[in-house]
Amino acid sequence: MQSLRCVRLLARPTAGTPSALARPAYRISTPQTIATSRAFSLLSPRRPQLLPSSCHAVSSSTTPSAITAADGTLLDLFPKISSHPSLASSQVRCGPRDTFSPSHRVRKRRHGFLARLRTRGGRKILMRRKLKGRQALTH
Image 1 (cartoon, one colour):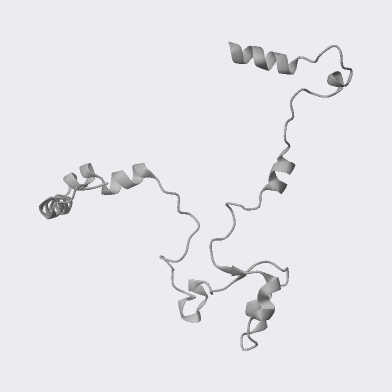
Image 2 (image 1 turned 90 degrees about the vertical axis):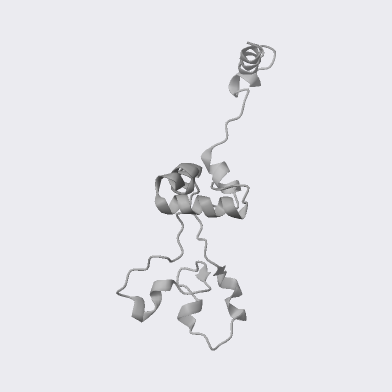
């Protein structure tokens, strides 16, 4: 109840000041100010990259197409796994990905104690870890 009274007092303009009627008592930040104040993004690529301004330090033995980009964006230091001509037609299954989001439920479902008990191989893993003296048998 105390918090509701405080909110009401903040929202209520005072009668003595005319400027209090013209502007709200609290300030709401717009999405534009939030977006411009952030210096990083979760959507940024997670591969090592060069800034276009630091490209002049690279030796002249590399090709210019590997260093510069037409739109001036960040450049990759290492080529992608599937960029080699021999891998062009094959499916790359273990390349770098941006999709890792750890989930404790999924980890426990796949590697947990009950999952180990369900299969014969899992029971063997539990037995080996118990004989070795592990404190934690599974996740």
